[in-house]
Amino acid sequence: MRLVYHPSKLPQAPILCWVTDRKGLTFAEEDLIEALLKRTVNAAVAGIDWIQTREKDLSGKELSSLTHAAVAQSKQINERNGTQTRIIVNDRLDVALSEHTGGIHLGEQSLAVLDVCKWLAAKPDLAGRDKFLVGVSCHSVQAAVSAARDGADYIFFGPVFATPSKAAFGDPQGLKRLAEVCSALAIPVLAIGGITLDNASDCLAAGAGGIAAIRLFQDSKNLASLVTDLRASFR
Image (cartoon, rainbow, N blue to C red; front, side, top):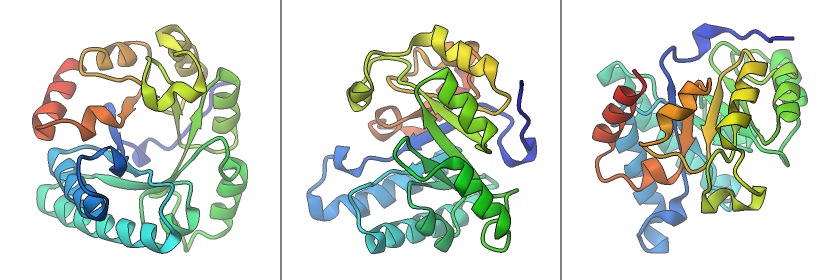
């Protein structure tokens, strides 16, 4: 069974998503939040579609403060440049809603996607479902199909290629498995894990609706040029 989604909620072009990891930045601990916010501004200016704030060790208060600033700055940039960069919060639905973000991303140990979607549907005043996305990280075809059936708007699938940040999930899934997941779903599947400028287009050829990465975007010396090169490689 193929599932349907509301295309107006998502970019039509391949989605570029930066997943943050402030501790991977080369700054002193006390400067990491400020450095991450500056990187967020640069990413929004460069035209990255989604910025997933994945800072699991922050307290609720710290994450709320960081998210508040990220949403405010990206909104200004979007209004000025006519772009649509979306801030998505990892795991913390309370923070995602209170700070008026563009969505929540759930992991395997997070809240159940079905419960989240039912709760959101019952409280449309808190998060209009035409503007607030629910995404899920999956590592198998079965998990992806289940998440989509339960109401997810998009899926992260991986690790597609070898990468230190996803080593805990075992061997890379590879492009063949990525293609299997993409063909089973009608919601966008974003490839994650070891994504580079050289292999990003291979993920789209396998059916992915976009790519998600930490180091690809976070380590780039010129985000605007990287985004331009990525979009050119997708043609």
